[in-house]
Image 1 (cartoon, one colour):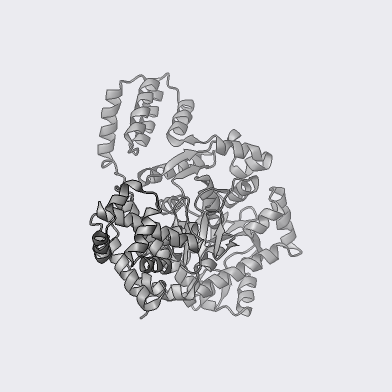
Image 2 (cartoon, rainbow, N blue to C red):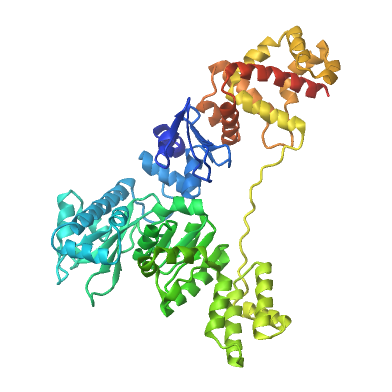
Length: 592
């Protein structure tokens, strides 16, 4: 079976992949854009169709199509492989022992959800019931543009909940009954599945996307009092898992990266209101409490999570639970206090600036709870001090950073008038009784080894130029076969102190031992081995193509090196002169 990575690369092009995420402009034989990974005004992100690489020369992010998808989608290699395999129509082997779901089945389920979403939108703008629902949305100050962006729709039906209008519509469009039942767009009323009705009946409908923007489920809000549950979500199935899905993440991820924080709110209306007010880096859960999988999903895009939950008791309880879930995950948590007990949607409806200012004035979560509980409890009484201490120490027991713990223990000592040593002891007892603190997993950052010597820097630059312009190197190398040509060029460089090193015997040794001379035993890249591979491959093929890199160690790193010098050196004549200088400098280094 063909390697799926190579099969995908054979079917997709880097320029098409990148163009689906950001606009590209032609720049000579390259394409360029402002980098999607950091803020900039002058484009430094280049795409090479020839090298099949997309790379930012400012922040050094990017690489081949897999590396680009990893960076922009915030996924690991397997995640990038699955995304690109789907785009390329390549079937992957299933790693898990669970039931295998074919790409064809996934595509059918996505298509059914997509057609259902279009149907719901159509019904919202239809005469009759849809008009009333549209009026309700207007009363909540939801703009036409926001409705269009979020593709809000209406599920028609009947008061007896026996409607099957969507089910029949999708069957007429060629969708299979089994797919409609699997995706829970329809539900069977009997064991034989002979009586099938729509899951969503007389409800306002919000399509739920995956991170790539495919509709995978729906949230339906009841429109009549007493119609329970108030919110009804799609049932979980192969494409839709509530605990690992976040509403609006597909639209928000670019803004999250740009702002370097995400705002998590409670509901669909809150998300739309925030988006409409201009705070677009906003998401909501999908019918569940905010769980660890969702925090991990958000960490792909930012470590800073701002929680904006309702001010009622239920909302504040959910806030505290979310904080305790996030504490061991290495997330920087902040809390938004919405004025006058409003929720996000109410605040935006009254005045968008209320919401914008609340987000701007967000507090670190420990400071938020300290202020909140000090207002709620009477710290002039023993009972108030006791309750406050228990609440705050319980929260501190989940804090792993010693600076945070020490700072807030000192503050707590002042607030309740208890010596800090006693509070430390009590906190340790609480931590022990809770089974000990969960230690954060520290992932060692990959820091590239510094090029410590002039020789290493010279070798790496030589390799970069060689990989980018092999033809020009071998032309210069051939020109300098004659010592007289080399000596003349060396004397013209103006390196007067080095000229005493020029002699025929040393130069012949330099050329004969050039491959051995390039060895860098302590460096991750073997300049000697790469030079030999370039020489042998170029002599046979007269070009360094993808096949050359396929068998090369550190191939992606070497591609980036070549791409960098290629962008900087677009004058072939100057490249030839640069190689002549480089060969001379390498000789002087050899002779040292």
